[in-house]
Amino acid sequence: MKQRIAHIAIVVQDYDEAIAWYTERLYFDLIEDTVLSESKRWVIVSPKGADSCSLLLAKAANPNQSACIGNQTGGRVFLFLHTDNFERDYNNLIEKDIRIVREPVVEIYGTVCVFEDLYGNLWDLIEPKQ
Image (cartoon, rainbow, N blue to C red):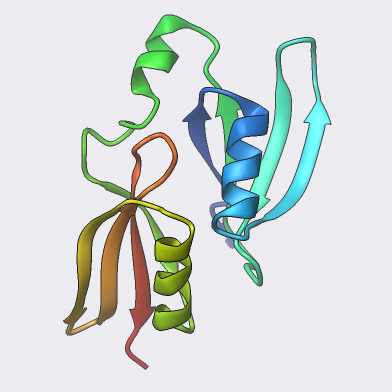
């Protein structure tokens, strides 16, 4: 048997706002933006060069979902973005005025910092040790 995680849904307030943030600030690629109904779209973004998991931007459809925007994991780091060049991508976070929650540190597994996305979800930016 062969399986893989294809997408991770992240609840967003607005499709276009989220697309702009991920593509203009993190330089993700917009893979798909398909209108499914008057209020629902299938929106996929992915880091450049990624060949597996991507983000499905899912607009909150009710108050319960809206309450989870930015806190899908109860305040824990939610997503882990690996990079081949920590300094380049960390400098991009600074240049794009992205909030750094924990400054870079070198750990046994690599160099890492924690940043927030536009809704407050926490991300690790990691350059793994080779």
